[in-house]
Image 1 (spheres, one colour):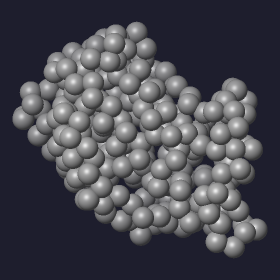
Image 2 (tube, rainbow, N blue to C red; image 1 turned 180 degrees about the vertical axis):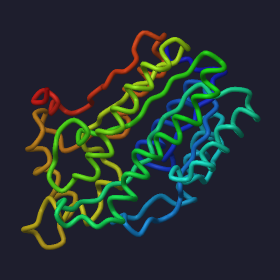
Image 3 (cartoon, rainbow, N blue to C red; image 1 turned 45 degrees about the vertical axis):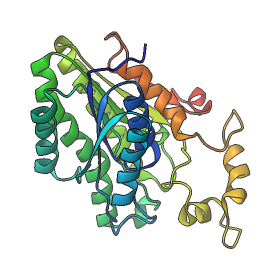
Image 4 (cartoon, one colour; image 1 turned 90 degrees about the horizontal axis):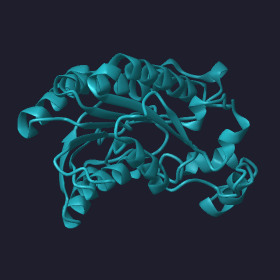
Length: 276
């Protein structure tokens, strides 16, 4: 079911965390994977972002497991760079079958105090960056009459969340974008779907700034302090997902024979049961 031999995939934001997990699973299933990441720090992001070393490590892990992968340093906010990446993949490999639009950033602020540059970087990365990636892939997928697009949204794209107005706006917008793509590409053998995870144990979450937000009463809180509080918010009693939990949903959608498109798949530890 998960045989992707001969297919070519692009994973954005793939240096670590969810993106790295998705890239490794695609390669293990036989796909040639191009893993791209900005591999640099944005000043509006309050945690350490992925580095070129992280990107190279993901590619090395794939190679060590017998897979085929390449690294590319690309900022998804740069339309021309993303288009050049997609065109280059097709020039080298002859096709582009799978796009995982995973690149994203997060920060916390009430809307009343949200700086312009934080809003702009969040929308530009999470929503516009996904648009750049999807548009760049579509010309090739339409031509070959085959493609699988999966965008990684969030539980914040399914309900309002305090301190996440900018992040939620980007993730709600992503769902609307992908549903439209699903309708427009339905005659061309392309599917476009969204995965909405709840909190995932990645460096975006497991950092001092996030720990302080969830434990304001504790000086210098740790993961051990945060874990029980997060677990108490989820019906299944777990604090967060592991990246591999999200990857299973991604792999289901990229290996679907073409009957699922325009869907939003929640991986939410039961939290989606309380949403419409």
